[in-house]
Image (cartoon, rainbow, N blue to C red; front, side):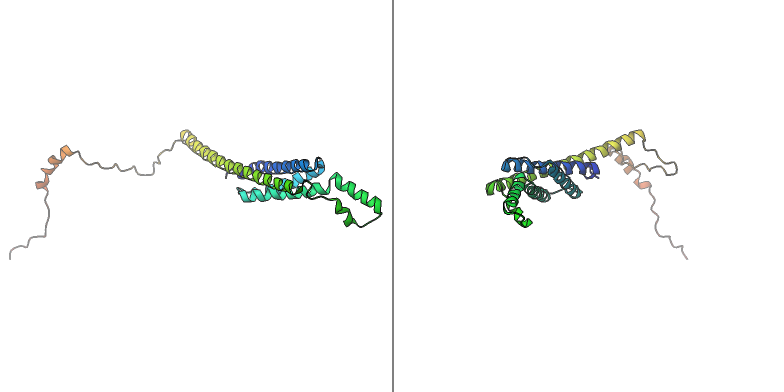
Length: 209
């Protein structure tokens, strides 16, 4: 089992992915709205993102899966930041104080889902895709290094085990037969002189009647 698939490896990979995705969402909201989101909202969003990333990190994550996670976290946090922003509360309060008690659905008119306009949303999407590509490259490199490290560790453990506990022959097993070797070329004529001494037995001779 590779180190990246262990609970420790999954925790590290999920934490890095969630932290980078939440940081990108906070920076994008700060650049678009000019204000920092609420810290409790950031904390809750980070915990939810960490839980989702942990569930998806049981095996090696592909670029498509990482891109889906990053864009999903961006969309969820963007909506949460927009609904809990100061401008939303101030607009809803002003509408309530001017017109009296109204329906709750009218209070959501102050939510601006595109605070920076389409260009800012497009730049945010490009940044999310770039971050996904960077995280996918790191994921691929981490799994490769973990596999090679595990292979080197297994070979080193095998060599150390053979040195500490050398293999010994079992006395119950028969000894190995020594492989026969062909005589050198210089001895071949000497062996050829013994051919006439070989007696080949044929069929029995019939006795005369």
